[in-house]
Length: 97
Image (tube, rainbow, N blue to C red; front, side, top):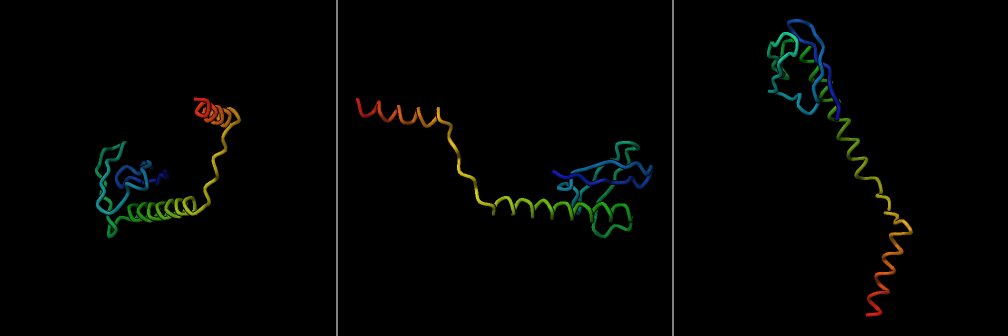
């Protein structure tokens, strides 16, 4: 989960929000002065544009990391000796019955 820093247009306080949430049409209230910020791609405000750009970049990096993780070979599950021993014991019990 990645976060993006946002600067309030009114009080200039910097706060964080999740990059996944910060998309076109999202609105968020400043935790300091409680003004509502609207996030749009075509916003005239440079702080909003910069936050949107950073959020896009963070989401892209997250997707790429997820794709790399999914395409990596999955390691085989190594069972402990106790676990494999129980498996062998249970199969021996079936043969005795």
